[in-house]
Image 1 (cartoon, rainbow, N blue to C red):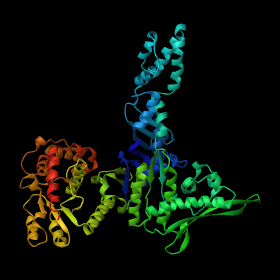
Image 2 (image 1 turned 180 degrees about the horizontal axis):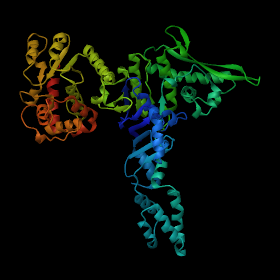
Image 3 (image 1 turned 180 degrees about the vertical axis):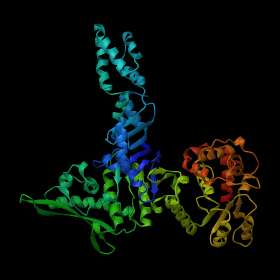
Image 4 (image 1 turned 60 degrees about the horizontal axis):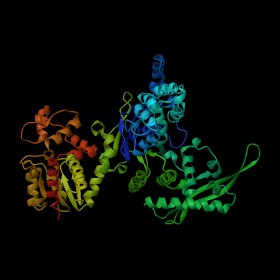
Length: 637
């Protein structure tokens, strides 16, 4: 099953996170320090932790300034603060989950594919499952060849009602032989004291993904005691000890070999571990490919309190750097390398099994150089997301993927009265919170600016989002989109474009797409005459829309664009309400009685909901954008 959404309430400084949609593969929580990103992961981890005995504790986790008052209020009304739900998650069942229920209860018992789970502060669970009890009874009775005398059983609406009818029929001697198998079977399928939804819950809960949480506190120690780790209760290990245990179990390490009294046997097994993890490190650690993991073992003798001596097998981790011809103890390497190595070790225990899992990474790769952070993003895409969903937090622009902004969720602390909230709506977020996204986009543009040969300059973010999103859809359907050679650069307005062309037009191949307006185009035409820009490389939207004055929004069929506008601003205007022949953005502003509205908001809706929105665009809209892309591609030399 897949995690669809999460809501956190009254956990640390989160009063109500709001309902947070989780992306189907990777979700990136972006925010400032102390904004609530880590708190979000800590609450989610406790829904069903993969490692450690991690639980909710109201005395530690309930918002401190509210706990006493809320506890008194709950008691005075006959309630219990421990029954409040700090975490609620909605999952989408996949066909295998549904089949698991069908194997026990028969087909079509689950009414919905959505499955909601909450956990209380007392660490009990609450679940919400929609089930069809009549269908379950019908499936059960269909297993038996009922005689005419038993057909009445099919009229039972509930499990308890069916039991009553069976009990009555067992008093009739001539029916006992036929009824007894049904009586025996009903308790096997429908155990007494359990509702049908509880039975379905018992089937589905083992299939609910566990949450594997990794933070800087999970970093591997450089020295660890082998026997103590292998013989300890896993649920009581700290995060760093959990990582160490994962390292011991890497590459199929066998406890018998690691605890073998023969030094050579133990040494060989640990070398196998070192070789396995060295290969992983070098594949994704491109900063230095001359590193090698070295693991050694020794025995340390300690005097116990009773005066006796104890001998401990200890494992030491060192990293040999062939570039500089020296080895260093693991905790003397850079903090970034320690983090990366530790995560690979911790994740190794989950990569090879099929247990359902969701990975939570708290500020991953924070100590890594920008290039190494890019390597780690590649690791997330190629290894982690192929295995399961990944949710990670960051405030680094290099950990934000500018071509996947739909994965970003913004986390902001709005003060004591509101608390930390999480949203995908950039319109409600402050500038500091947005900075990593803006910086990621800016860096991406800068990279294209100085590296790409063919540059497509557009006026603003809405042009960029509309063109990129619809181009991808056209390509997916075998039509012509923007050529992959183009690097799209939104410059923030038509007034900026002439300056950009004047500065760099002689050094780069640039095509410009601007709205069809007379004002401002004289400078571009002048630059073209001066040789900074070929005349054919100035494209106006009016050429495509076949009108003198047009914006990129006029390439949309009116109904298509109005639908985006209504969603963006929670409006209910109709295309028929718009009057005039001027651009649609002016028609809408006039109908709404405003001078102007944010043109980026409808574009963000198209990007955020592109799976459904783009597929529902009319043929007129798609034809118009395809014509624009053909015109743009024709300027390539």
